[in-house]
Image 1 (spheres, each protein chain N blue to C red):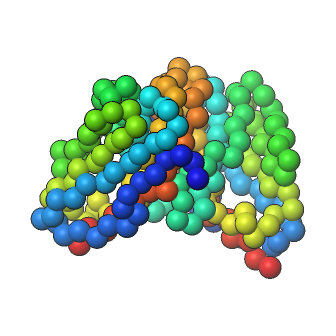
Image 2: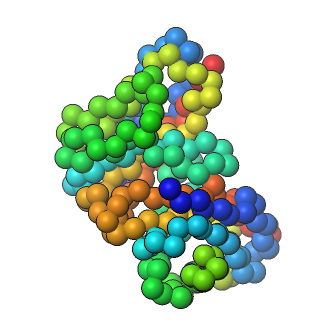
Length: 111
Length: 114
């Protein structure tokens, strides 16, 4: 299985950008995902990136992938209070349902 | 609303109790999953069913017993649990088992074992 590591906590001021970082060990991952878990809810897929891409942008979200360093990041522009949640990165392959999750980063947005 | 519902949302049970968790998906998916989420730990995959057949048992203790009567319903039967089994249990479903199928998660059942 793959090890996926991410920092546990991030505090950001409303309106600033948030950057959540993740490192992984398995270079054979085809997909790298970011999930969001709001209080009292399950995980919601936010975005994903194929392993042959370096960057993906989706509205306020920018995903950067550095395959050489096995480093994945999620940038949230203009962070809002509704962005307070736990964010999980995960790796997977196209022919297998198994996902390797990190422990989650709790993002707290302060006014 | 992801189309995956779980009941109950909260459950407190003693170590000698028997209880069941229920998951239902309204998405027409064929695969269903049970995950265990403990605080500050990665999600752990427990069981996987595809077309009602179990395809994965990730070395889960026998005090957890899954049941999948049809592709829309998944149960997790619990008996003689331990306090360390306290966690959030998440159900998920996907169209198929291939990795490109997105997994849709339910809100979870928060289980406390006393």
